[in-house]
Length: 197
Image 1: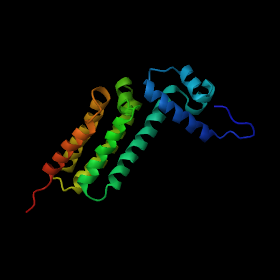
Image 2: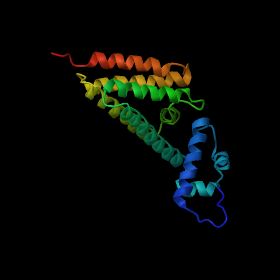
Image 3: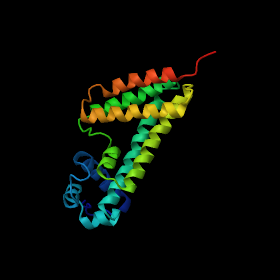
Image 4: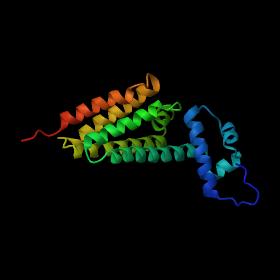
């Protein structure tokens, strides 16, 4: 990553730029689909620069997965919040956002779950568990606001729909995976509500 003449080196900006480019490359090619040398060439940095900022390719992958998880969790929470106070609208907004993601030509599935499937190591498994917990917190909160009899159970069922739709969109047919999961989620939400007296 060449530094323009007259500018100063900013380690945080360099690290962020490496992370941004590496995220695109690793997501598009898979964690094992690109070696360190090619990754450095595509990023525009030397191996020494990459290692100075991240230590190892594994540490770069972990940083990428953590940043992506935070970004995705915030994006879905913002989609739910923007839908207003009605839990059904919030839930629908989550699945509508997911469908827009599935429709993106660069969609390759969930980077975090892809990484967990490729690398059965504790660090990646921990990041994956935290990622799914973020989804679960969002979905359980919606279930609770909807008056579900058992919000944690409904949250878990909704998480299964989110992840199932993501897998189907990545590996089978993205065309209506989010919409089909949305309909199932709203049916579950309605069925799980406490009966009125």
